Length: 255
Ligand SMILES: Cc1cc2nc3c(=O)[nH]c(=O)nc-3n(C[C@H](O)[C@H](O)[C@H](O)COP(=O)(O)OP(=O)(O)OC[C@H]3O[C@@H](n4cnc5c(N)ncnc54)[C@H](O)[C@@H]3O)c2cc1C
Image (cartoon, rainbow, N blue to C red; front, side):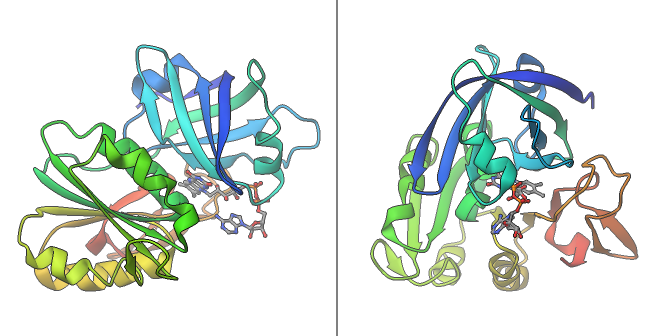
């Protein structure tokens, strides 16, 4: 698939929580071609930026407007610079990169925690012909803006919070066995912190329901050259940037 290196234009951004932002960027090449699960790498045009571009999952596209969304957590140098950008500023984008989600099922359960919900947000919005439910894991009720983002894209939203301030008290693994017992899902999609994804895969595997995982590994180039994002696959090493970031759960053995 064609990759583009373009200067996108910031159309706007807003805070979803104290440390999470949603940014809309005009970049028609990316907006027209990106598929759910793919990512872009970003470099701001500040002189002080880190040398390496940083990866972010595409969180949604408006193909007519030629824009796409990023939902990002402010954690370090690039994301601190990103949050200072204003409407009309430009930002360097390379993408779309990697392989997206398989979208050939009819009843999908999306499971995400934290900014892992960003690529699932795009999947929920662009899964033709499928019934989509989402299981949202958050630390506390303050992070449940996700429910609003998913409300018009999914049939059902189930929320868990670690501290019990909203939804079911516990982690996404608390309601998951009962949800799977309902027997309606023919594919599970998960993206979030690695321990959460491993726990979900351990619950889903015995049911025989296919499961796709979207991995986050630090990467240098995002193009398959530097090998910094490799992990163990069946009989081979796989590169998260090029072979993924989306894999079938059985394809990777350790991540
Ligand atoms: C395929 C892929 C898709 C991604 N999609 C998204 C996305 O949609 N939204 C998003 O917010 N992030 C996403 N990430 C993670 C994002 O690339 C990193 O958070 C990135 O390092 C931030 O760059 P920075 O320069 O701001 O911070 P850095 O300078 O790289 O990191 C600063 C400090 O924060 C720590 N840190 C970095 N990332 C995290 C993190 N995620 N959680 C906790 N501590 C962290 C580092 O260990 C370091 O100590 C994705 C990563 C991959 C590989």
